Length: 123
Image 1 (cartoon, rainbow, N blue to C red):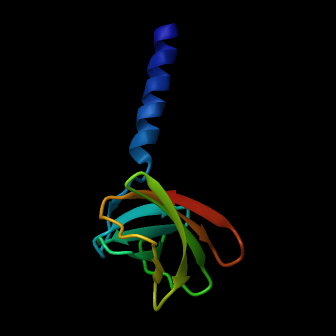
Image 2 (tube, rainbow, N blue to C red; image 1 turned 120 degrees about the vertical axis):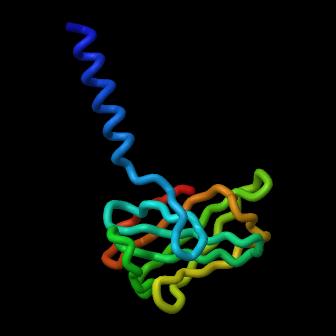
């Protein structure tokens, strides 16, 4: 009986992991990650202090950035840097880090959706 329970638990854990949406390359060359259940953010880091985030809905269609606010937290050479992102044209949000941010850096985007709910995406 115990081996059936263990087998069932293992099957559930494997199937739920397979269904989770992990990071994937976005159309702008950055990593596209979930931002809650209804949005995605694509974070583009190009080795300069300029950070660009592209917003899309749960079907990967671009979403205008107007009305959204965001903050970025990015680790560069072991130091954590926090800065705001502002809505730009179309689905873009932009911000300037205090240092150059190499592609592949780790961090998080805190996105406030119009209407007030906040989601956090890590990359």
